[in-house]
Length: 373
Image 1 (cartoon, rainbow, N blue to C red):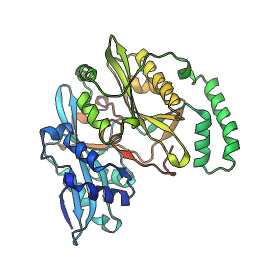
Image 2: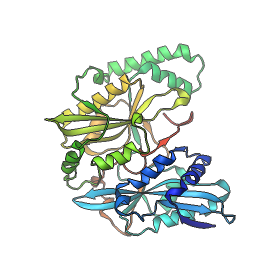
Image 3: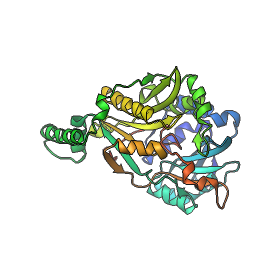
C-alpha cells in the first residue's frame, strides 16, 4: 500500500472513491478546480497539500482523505485550522486507513485539526489521536422551527412509513399547529422585519469582518467577502445559499446564512442556519434576523428550519425561541491542537462553533430516506 499527495487532477478519482463508499459528494470538475484555486490560504501557499490518495499494490486508487485549510483569528493572531474531509477507503482495504490519517496528523505549520462531519468510525479514530469534542456542550442539540405544519407532518409520516399519509397529514399538522400556537411559538410569522435578502456577498462584508474580528477572546473563521464567496459560492450553487442581513445606515450589523438541506426521499424541504453573526449582542437584531429567516423559509416552500451550534447569548436566545429539538448521533465535531499539552483552544469560552466551521456547509451532499430529519 502506498500514499501520495492528492492533486487538482484527481477530481474523478476522489469523486469515485467517495461515492462508492457512500459519502455522496457532488462536485463538477470546474467547481473542484475553483474550490482549491481560490481557497484563501492556498492562494498564498500554492504547495499546500489538498489531501492524500491511498493506492493498493496493483496501483489502483482505493482511498482518499481531503485536507482543507481554513484561516481563523484569535485576538488578532492568525491561526490555521485544517479540516479532515471526505475520508473514504474501499471496504477490503480499510485496515490501511490509518496510513491516510497519519499523513493528516503529521502536518507541519498547522495550529489545529478538526473534523466537523464525523461519523461513528471517524470520530473514534480522531479520539484515538487525542482529539476532543469541540468545547460546546449543546453542539449535538439541533434546534428546530416548523414553518409549514402540514408539509412537515407529511414528511414525518413518510419517514415513519405510516400508511394513509394523504389523510393523516391533516390531523397531525393541526395538532402541531395547536401546540405551537398555545405555547406562542408562532411569534415569527407576525413580526415585521427589516431583513434584506442579498444574492451575493459585497464589500460591506469586508467592513463587517473588520469590526467582528475585533471581538476579544473569540476564535473566528475569516468572514470577509473573499472568504464567504469561496465558502458558499464555489462548491455550492447560488440557489442553495440564502443570505439575509440586518442594516444600520447601510452598514451590516448582523447576518444569517441559510443553506438548503432537502431530503427528497420524504419530500422534506428544509433550510439549515449555517452562520449567524452579530456585531453586538443585540437581542432585537437577533430576533429580527431569525424571524426574517423563518419567514423567508416559509415563502420559499420549506417546512423546517434547523440550527446547530453557536454559544453565549446567541445560543441562549435561539434556544428560548425554539420549541423543538433533536439530537445529533453520533457527535459530529472534534478538534485537536497541533501542539501537545495544554492549549488555549481548550478554553470553551473561546468557541462559537457552527456549520460554517470545518467542512459542514462547504459541499452539496445527497440525502437519503434514512437521514435523520
